[in-house]
Length: 277
Image 1 (cartoon, rainbow, N blue to C red):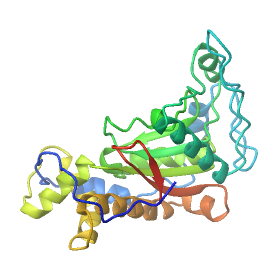
Image 2 (cartoon, one colour; image 1 turned 135 degrees about the vertical axis):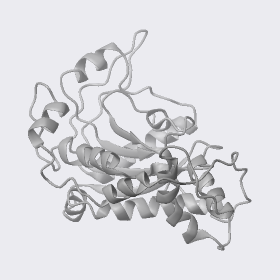
Image 3 (spheres, helix red, strand yellow; image 1 turned 90 degrees about the horizontal axis):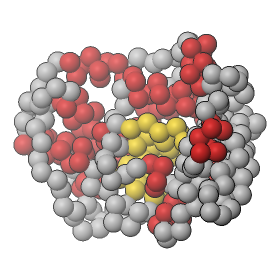
């Protein structure tokens, strides 16, 4: 995968939405700095991870997926070996995205047999934080199926306690050796933040104001720089989110010891390609 040019022509932005107002966003912003720590309630979380089996230790012996399904009407793909580390997990996502863009989908790990196999335990090989945008369905983009990925989505990939805790759960409790933060082309949440800051509006309904506040640093960081402002802001936000996640007392140490790989990526709506940062 190639690194995208950030000097492409400006992209069309979606209609303007209103920016922030009430003080509840301060509560959520404060929550971002509140770490869940190692005491996430391991017994409860492990019970969620598997109702019948204990979760294996984090490390090379992770990600042991059940055999891929043989769909009716012909043999399906061969059973995949477990991934040994974050690099192998990333390569598996890269290969799946290539199949997606070339329209050669394997429909890996789908169907009745796979559903039954993962009903008792799960061994996903990657955790992905993406946007809520309906045009970016994570499993489809990577040609993956049941039990393969831990997917967490929020508008613009914004972090709060729930999102960060879910990512920590995927890595620390389900032992995925890869954590990807996936931004995308023409992100509506980032575009709305740009318009809110440009217009200096301060009102927003509900918690939309919190989203604007959380995405504002990325927009400010690229303002006045060459290239497409929206695309640049999305890339900047991915980098800022990764920086925040590295401060997690759960994720940071795991990355330093090589038990998890953190990467950023950018999804092109026009081509279907995922470009690794």
